[in-house]
Image 1: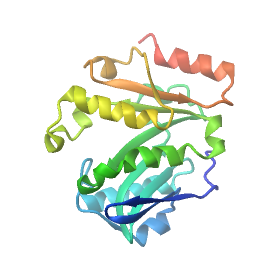
Image 2: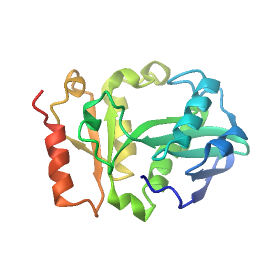
Image 3: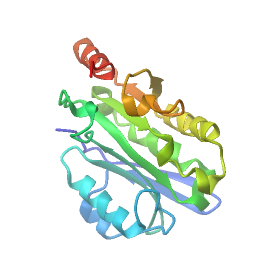
Image 4: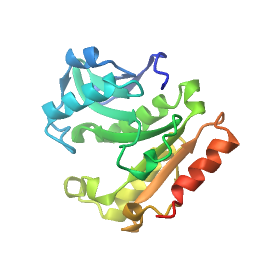
Length: 207
């Protein structure tokens, strides 16, 4: 079971005033908050809030949020990989996925995304885990930012780097389907050599 007892929080001074970064938050805590109308990259905001509540209720689910007063303006999610994906094939209890990260467009100049990831990995217990993030260009809001695929990829990579996630090779067909896609990985200091080898096998499955 994924450890989520340690409460993390940090205040960040921005042009909008102090923004509170905090988590992991519970489903009940999320019920008391509002969600910014610009958090719609994956689904409409209110449905996204319901999805966050569902993740927060999972044993392994971890949600960290950025708050402007009572308004969620950003979030990052951690949970086990989807059962239909290769990353859950070996059912590694210490393999967790950074599933989604989103910050409301008007707040993006404050680097809240990278700060949320930094906060998430500041829990020493994270060193027991392998964290992955699967980056697919079709999930990026390129139209809103007007950036090229490659410029957006650089931004995503830089943001993940703040949490210690680095690009790692894999033969996963979805990731290999476009050169901008990538697998980002952070291997905790306490992960055994045996689990690292199992993860290497997972990255290069013989389909």
